[in-house]
Amino acid sequence: MLSRLTEAAEDLALPSAVLTFDPHPREFFAKHAAPPRLSTLRGKLEQFAAHGITRAIIARFNAELASLTAEAFIEQVLVRRLGVRWLLVGDDFRFGRGRAGDLELLRGNATSFSVEAMPTVVIDGERASSSAVRAALANGDMEHAAKLLGRPYAISGKVAHGEKLGRSLGFPTANIPLRHKPALSGIFAVRVAGLGATPRAGVASLGVRPTVKAGGRPLLEVFVFDFDQPIYGVRLHIEFLHKLRDEERYPDLDTLSRQIHTDMLHAREYFAMHK
Image (tube, rainbow, N blue to C red):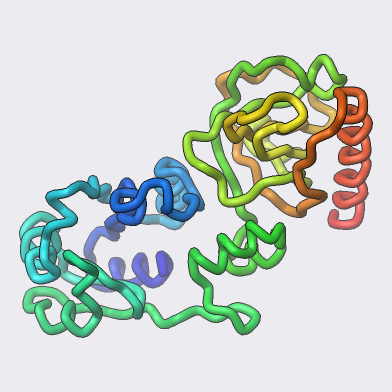
């Protein structure tokens, strides 16, 4: 979709721009029932930039925006504020108060710009969608999630100080706090960028650490193979390549330490087979 957008922008001699909403409309209407985010706002903007998008417009989704009818959204947002000349949307795009607007209404009211619909993308017989990606991540099928996304699923964030538990167990980890509920959990073989010119292999734990504390907040902990330097404040990009197992609660820290050692061996075996 982004490739088609940049192609059209070049043909029309116009800047390419993406309109995105924050928070997601479903978070605004039912915060606790909304699906997990697949990326942070910053991660989304980084993806836009990586694909050559010139501008990203972030629309704060609030009560005022939610109250606009579909027709008012076209006139006030697309025409007056953005000056849209050409628009690309998904073929199932819905917008406006009560999700009353659809592709047909959009085209019928687009008097000053043209509208193109992005056809459905099918991967291995399944429609590529955010719901399909979330399902693949929840099932631990990282390979299928990567096919749907066109790249490995990834989380980016800054390394923060933690409780130093991993270091005391012999496995110093980079701790990355998460602001939103993640779309996956468990132990994973990962590839880590941000520590030099070449990404490094490692293993990551994403979850609430039930052996350490009850009712903990989700945390991403990454152990990078053959690396032991202070990296607090460094922004890392972690690609989730393969799920090793689900998160579990162990009776004591010694048992947890032995399992972490086993996870390391399994992750190294994965990378040895996928060079």
